[in-house]
Image 1 (cartoon, rainbow, N blue to C red):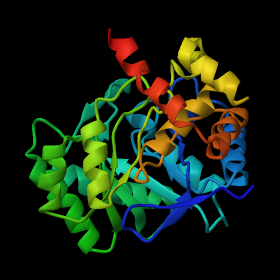
Image 2: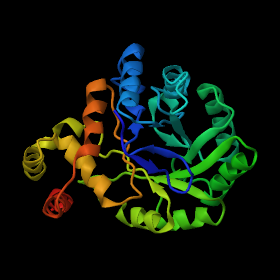
Image 3: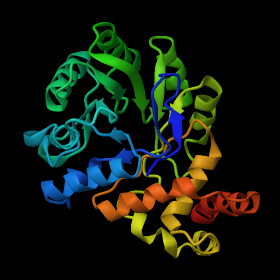
Length: 288
């Protein structure tokens, strides 16, 4: 399958209109390795070439880099694949905690380089601001890694507009990855600023999170529009994001090949203005 291509911000990198979030392949409930690799290969067959990961996508700190190593194994001899990874989260005893210290980010990047088996990371994203560390210090550390040639493009994740602007004073920002979907519009201001600046916006949890993706069809509006297009509710949710802005590149997570194949079908769905207006109201229904 040939998927329409989108430019990843100002990077010069062209990827499929949809990427794949790989976290479900390495956290609680993950599939066996062979099935994880099968899912990644299914994504490639659908024309998906951007794979989003992080050193913290694992069960706990004893297997840090699990998801990166899985991707490296699955993507051998697949030069079309682009891997975006992140640093700044840690997993002590399975908890999610932040560590934005420059020395940690440097070590995290070095570890990711080894896990991925590459000389430079195509897109390295600061995973989440650490309230214990000045934001500028964390971003400055990633900028230094870029100057050293260990990182090609720099991205941010879980940031506000103010933090995006602060980071732009330190480094060229290629992408921002924040949570956004039909049910959660809290990063709409960040997305719009990215569009103005020509920065790629990668909405994670485009199906409202790992625990909710399967059940989004219970929303009456979403289900009705899906029936209208002979599509799945998941495809409609992703199609809404694709039509929201040319800056958007959704990264639905998947642990099964059937799920990522379903998500990829969203690239073939065109919503009407009436559809979009109805879908826009879902977030208001959810928060009412």
